[in-house]
Image (cartoon, rainbow, N blue to C red; front, side, top):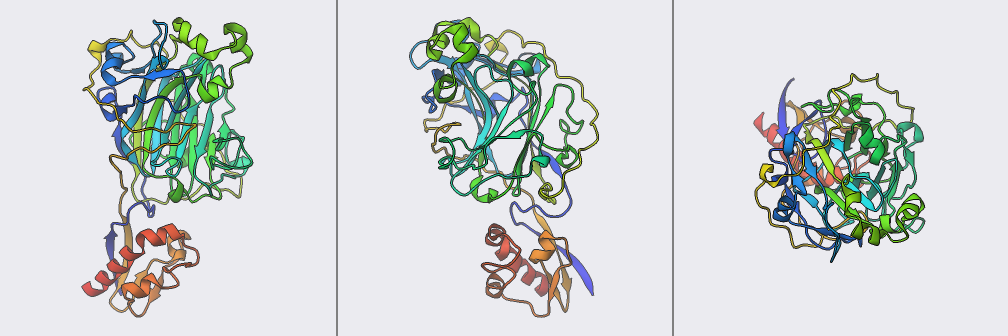
Length: 456
């Protein structure tokens, strides 16, 4: 018996042995050209006026001075109309499965603010939302949350992550949680968000999204693993994440075509509703009035991005982190050079290398409300490799060989497409194999197995 290898284009199934490779580098040179500037009214009810790219450039709200990406807000004028001028960016490209690594020197912070770095899919919440960085007012630890349609929950054991899990049902209308609360974690490190993050020289966030789980890592400035900012990162060597979303959730069904988003709003349905405590004691009882009349308070309300990179996984065994036994922490990683904590150079439109970009007229979603947004481009992943035997028998991937790394079963007689599609191995209700994998790829398998047999 001899063997041959077939290359089967079967979309986003993670099999074999490989790893992440760089898909998109949102470098300072091309950063703003890779985003749409949204200008609609804020769906969270924030006191904010999102401006288009020409306005953002001329008003000094964006620049790429000194190789850093600056995304800020108006901190010189009393606000009027819809609110304080700010910027909301949504990536032109969409992704299906990705490792997103953001190296920040500075994030927005302070009373009245509500910054977020997140992703969302079409027809919110059907396409899902992943909040990587989010918080309000003088919050000191980062919030990480998923928002989905019905039927998704995260319930990994506490030993599998380092953060604090606050809610478990990701459904935005869960009867047992506040509206749009989702399933969420809080980081435990005080330098993970806001002024603590900035005073510590920034840090690195990484979000890995696979068909089995979504996890978020955080490292304070200078402590990220050496490969996290390289060309071939390996999340399996990074130890426990800050947040691990895994459990009773078909991730393929609830998350798709994600767009990367930066925004900076004020007050609204979270920061405004949470206004009180130290903020109210210092600035009065009205969040909107404070934001409107105190522009100088927002000099530190900006993102300063060292780098943003998106990686795609070539065919690999993206198996879920252990949810049974306690994961063993990885060895303490070698430190990378500390990110610069110096403030970016004063905004200058003359140094911003960005073409004019018209803003979309569609309604857009946020961390608190639903909307629909078109997905302009969809990234698909790499092929899978299937080995077949010849001439008398043909190896057919089965649930055991695909998901348990056990030997593949053999068929003495080659089945037809129809027989494969209705078989116990690939048909409806086939044991041990997810329906989503069967639906997406069984026809490819049948066709290529038949082609291989005909070759011999």
